[in-house]
Every structure is written in structure tokens, then in C-alpha cells.
Image 1 (cartoon, rainbow, N blue to C red):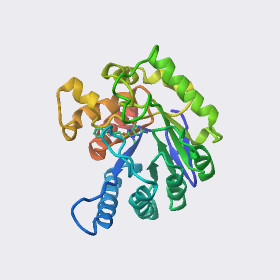
Image 2 (image 1 turned 90 degrees about the vertical axis):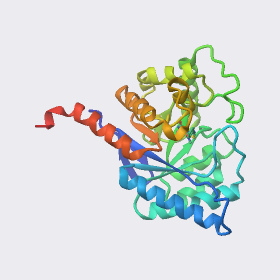
Image 3 (image 1 turned 90 degrees about the horizontal axis):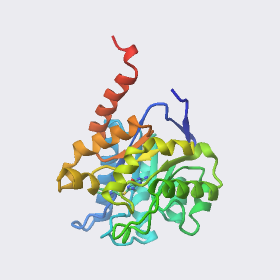
Image 4 (image 1 turned 45 degrees about the vertical axis):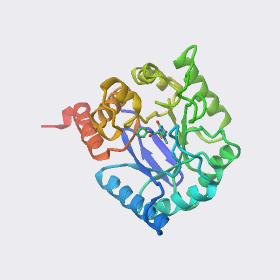
Length: 279
Ligand code: 8Y4
């Protein structure tokens, strides 16, 4: 098996076996007056639970990338994610920050974040420099268009060639050592249902870029589109299945809501790979 490591500031993540990135959303609590504090506490507790369930990385996000979501200011994004990143990092957990804002990247790294997960692939002004200076590991993701409009009319001449050349260009722009980079084809980001499943079917094609791959398909609408499961929270089996298929085709990291179940599936995968070690 390949001895690959993802260098993320003072941590090194062993990618010789598949890793789980657990999703931690920090959304404001609309009820209570002490709402901000409360939502941080809840997110910290959720992160700790995902770590106990087997998450190798916790991805902390304070801005929804859903089409209907409002933009969040730098100030409120910082207010949401920083306390959570600080608390989870202080417990020795590997934390990634899901952000496109350079100010948030810098502040997150200062309180212990090891990874920057940017769905804009560092295209926002100042993001490239912030990521370089932080020393963080970086996940570069493909997206066609902007979150608000990307699902309106996705158009490609050649999906695979375009996603690959986008990622290759992002790599050229970035003055960050190769050991710090992971690539993501961006399932659900400006693609039709068929195109999303093409990205899954052809996972192996992306390996030719020479970087570890991350797939984030958890509960996404394309899964529901083929199964008929309308509610996102009910797409557990679909999510686990899709990510296991990606891993089987060469993905190194899966970004999921349901860590416990993903961990169990990966245990079966590893038993298959290492059957000789079993009695
Ligand atoms: C239900 C729940 C339905 C969540 C849709 C969603 C990715 C990502 C997102 C991804 C990387 C999401 C931040 C979208 N997706 N980062 N982030 N890769 N690297 N939607 O695929 O989870 S947010």
C-alpha cells in the first residue's frame, strides 16, 4: 500500500488507509438570547461525539454553501467557528476549517486549525496568500459557477477533462508544497445528477493528477434523486454506499455527517483488503 501522508501544519495524516472527515456545522441558534454561545457549545459537543465515533478530521463550517443560504459576514463567521476550532484543537483533534474567507483561514490557523477546506479553491482575493502563510493542509475543490446559481444549468463539453484541468490550474496557482494538498472533484457543485455519478464512477481517473482525493457526497440531493429518498437525514445508506464506492476506486478521505456508520463500513473494507491478517 502507498505510504502517503498529508502534511497539515504540525500534524501528518497517514493516508495509507482511508480517513473520515466529520461534518460540524456551526449555525446560529435562533431561540435563546445567549444563542451564539449555545450554538458554539452544541457544535463543540457534536465535534467531540464525531471524534469518539471515529472521525479523523473535524470539518468546521459557519457558512452554508446551500443555494438558498444567505452570505455570512467575516465577523459573524469568525464568531461562529473560532470558539469551536479552538476548543476542539485544544483537545488534540485534527480540525479543518470550511471557509472561503482569508480572514477566517488566518484566524482559524492561529487557534489550531490544521486544514483549510475551501469550496472556492482559494479563488477569493487574499485566500491564496492566507493559505500559503498558514502552513495548513489544503483541500482544493472543483465548482462550476457560484453556490447560488451553480445548479441552474451546469454545462460541460467534457466533464472529466474540465474538472481535471480546473484542479491542475488551481495547483499551478498555489505556492504550497505538494504534500499539503488534497483534491476534490466537487460532487454536487455545478453538476447534473448524471455528471455527479460520472465523477464517482471515474474516481480512478483523478488519481492521475498525483494527489490524494477527497469525496463529499453525504446526504446530497443527487443521492436522493436516484433513490427517491426526499429527506436529507434519511440518506444514510446512500451516503455510506457512495463513499465506500469512492474509497474502493481510490479516494483517501470521505467527508460525512454519519461518522459511526461510515467507520463501520470502512472496517469491512479494511478487513477485505487485509484478509490475510484475519484468522
Ligand atoms: C444535505 C446536507 C444536503 C448537506 C446537501 C449538503 C463539500 C464540501 C460541502 C464537498 C468539500 C453539503 C463544505 C455541501 N460539500 N467540501 N463542503 N467537498 N471538500 N451539502 O463535496 O454538504 S457543503
